[in-house]
Length: 535
Image (cartoon, rainbow, N blue to C red; front, side, top):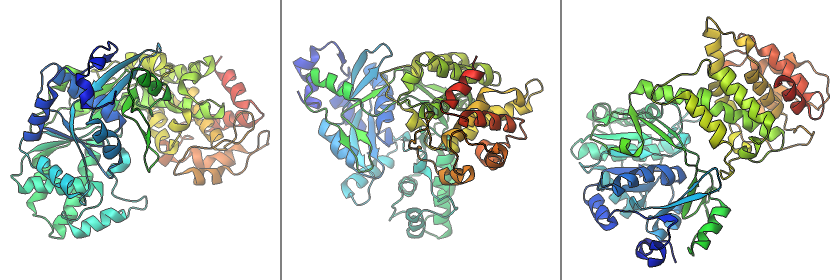
């Protein structure tokens, strides 16, 4: 059978007990959504299909809502043309449990799919009609952190943004320019309220989104390209809730594909986009998921708390994010990424089978991080970290790699370890100089930057914007070389832009130098050093 709307009434599929079907009248929901759209989402990739669309499906299945979501591709039509429309906007969600079993569910809450391209007049006019509707409550986003950026590293506007600022809302090319143009259209058609909800995994995502929109609008106002009152509308009628989202949705799995073919589906082929992204009619994901949202909605919202979403205030969202990013998940992931690359691992799950690496993340999390963890109240830090260490990371069905997680470490290490180091420095009881396992991991990162694994073989270092600069400071070092670690590492370890603090001021710079020397002293020096300090 083919995976499209017709299969929902196929007796072959109805007879299958291992695939959960939607329980609502999809035709009625599509009609309701077309007449009175409530929710449009930009960025219809795997996290949206596996998590956000499933949340709304839960409400539809229980009769708690009567509208679906309209999905929009921000910049190109590939995922719409090759995944969404050929399958009537359906997705097959495969939840991969740690015991090897899979739960399958057809997600039918997406009622329409469009491309956010002014040149595609049919789609663009439809998007405009949705965005001026008084019924619209939410414009949400999963576009990655890069999607909100207006400027280059040197502070200059990107070329597409520069052109948008000159031309105004009727000729926009950048994605943030398109969103600002759509909001201006809404302003001109009654200035109705709406909420813009970033669900991307970046700090203070609501503020990041707000700042980009307001920056473009301010430039347009200064050039007399829009009404001056538009800026006031963006501040008074639009809200930008901050959120924390967490769910692992890796690339589609070949094993899952084979299983779905055995279930009778004929069209489970992979699609590789021009940008190298891998899509399929199905999306596979872990079971664990968290979504915490600041509850400031200007025009109402779905009752997503009934689907497990936590609504709270901004301070609490910040605390949840800090708990996750600084203590309970991201630092452990980064440690596994660094040492996984050095020791030749290609999956996070297999690393967790190593008693040595498991002990390392337990020491970083329980012994060092949890002493200064931020407790948000709405989630238990202890429960969160235990689920990561005992369920999420060891799940062999999740094909996540240390090489992927090691990308851009220089941009993340300050948050993932620097905040804990600063908390120790500010404590009246704890001392940063007593830390062992976080400094050990930072030393491991410096060792990783050499591009030589623990057996002395070269390996490919994951992309990082500071890689060339950092490697130039390290110079050429071979295993067994006698070096002056301080002269080589001092510029890196004292750089507060990387770590959030000068590590020598924290009292751990010299300790990191010592660990680094031990790790480069010989082949297998990394394993020997880890064993020495993880007794």
